[in-house]
Length: 68
Image (cartoon, rainbow, N blue to C red; front, top):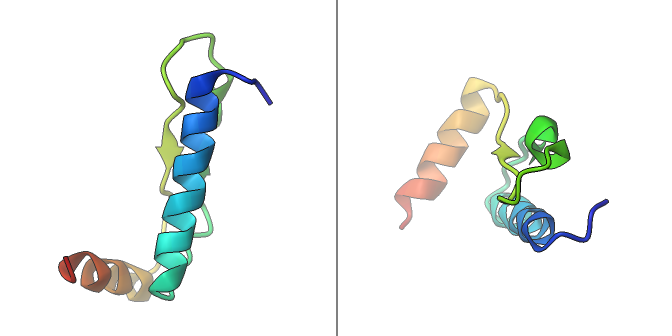
């Protein structure tokens, strides 16, 4: 893993998102760092891949977002 600040930022954001989703009973199996952007030489933080989910998970996610 790189020690670039942008990489740390993305990894921390990913952990926060996983925890927030888990608090609502939501697991996105594909949730991870976007590997091509993580491996790139650009100095911007890597992207986070949200991935695919089934309809039940999509509804849980929509309901959780609607809580705000």
